[in-house]
Amino acid sequence: MQGFAKTWRQLCSICRIIHDTAMSETLVTREAQAQAQVLTSPAPFGLIACTTASGCDNLTAVSWWTSLSNRPPMLAVSLSQHSFSRDCIKQNREFTLSVVDQSLAQAALQCGKYSGRTVDKVKKFQIEMTQSMLVKPGFVSKSRVSFECRVIKDMQTGDHTLFVAEILQIHTDLSCCALYAVNGYRSLAPVEFPDV
Image 1: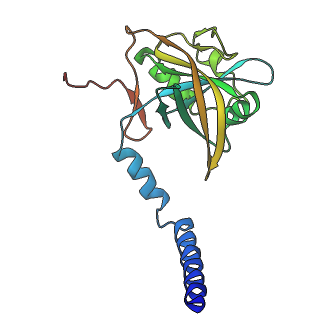
Image 2: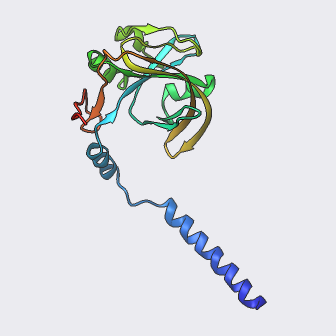
């Protein structure tokens, strides 16, 4: 019986190694991933505001975000390892997420094309900000909904960092029409949903 147990443990160990190796290798090409992003759009679009070392608000475009929990209220955002905003959030542990109005579509799309390392996007694209109540970064004034968030955990997920955050405050303006990333991330537009 001991021989069987030892053989079984060795077999399980080999299976774990094979499983781990198989899980770390992917057959998904960049082209397939890009196509999948187009096929799964529209995706809710927002602008993240974070505080730079000089104390200014920096904006970045994001559609990789999701709600995580109702109680306590939590959400998550995923930012590239190379993102200036990722570095700011990692340092300061707080941000705002604003689901911006359709009137900001062009400015918001441009926020994803420039780096906050070299461009003050709030000034360049003339985006009006409102002072937050509980976190240092402001939020975009013309937004259907804005969340003030404090990071409680972050983790590297391949070439991105996932930030898990507690929602401290929510601001809403139902007169604003939310934007969605459509056709992958090629454009931003409001989406009309049928009445239920």
